Image 1: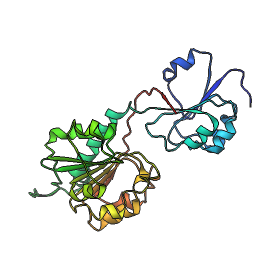
Image 2: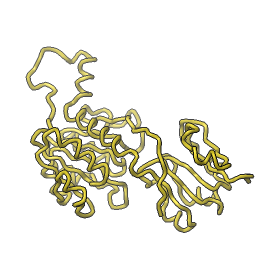
Image 3: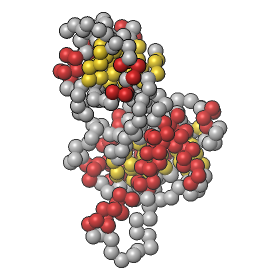
Image 4: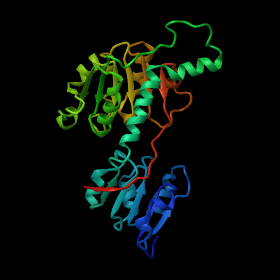
Amino acid sequence: MTHVNPVCFTSRSHDPDTFPHLSSCSCNIEQWDSDEPVPRSELLEKVAGIRGLYCLLTEKIDAEVLDAAGPSLQVVSTMSVGYDHVSLEELKKRGIRLGYTPDVLTEAVAELTVALLLATSRRLLEAVDEAKNGGWGTWKPLWMCGYGLTDSTVGILGLGRIGAAVMARLKPFGVKRFLYADTGPRPDMATKIPAEFVPLEELARHSDFVVVCCALTPETQGICASSLFSLMKDTAIFINTSRGGVVNQEDLYQALVNGQIAAAGLDVTEPEPLPIDHPLLKLKNCGESVLKPAEKQWLKMVI
């Protein structure tokens, strides 16, 4: 497959204004004209001979795709903060640069994280269901009370831009103590809150709310498992807005069913979306969000 001009292939339909610079430099832009992910076979066909690939989290960019693209491919850009779906090792082998969007969604994700935390801890979705299905009867003093943030301890797993932004938004609620666990201390971000660097085990024991904001790496894959949930308070709320692969979902299900933790709010899962018959979706104390931040993205070149 040959192209007269340098070509960029985008794996999802986008507004033309998304590519103002490419449109003005005689670069052919070929789009997968659908809001649904491009099938793997189509992706392998479309990338042949291109100079640039613009993808989403739904596309696994590995050796097979890069081989199909051939030596003309110079850059891969992903419309996401994370890039765990892209093989960095394979890009480096070929001298292909990677573009991603590290900061454009910080505020949006932080806002959605707080919204998910409040909806989960204050049992808003449960309350709506009860109101709709007739479960709301006479007034009961402690019915649907949930758990509050005032005088609480909030633990953040992964104190990056989003983790710090979440803390800043939760602070006015009267949180008494902020803890964080990371690969090492982050005084540049922690002192602004302030937040205390602790081992993950200590964070789990002392936190009333555990919020996962870390990147998905080989080290964090499945890090939120039974060993973590067993240390948490039985009144603790678990929130994940990072990546589904960070959580062992079977262990989370058991922790929720057995009362090891009080509730969970999930913005990310494996797979996405979860099948409608998945056990987690049948639990009243587990909520899944389909809200995703959507803003125009600008690419930053790295590696």
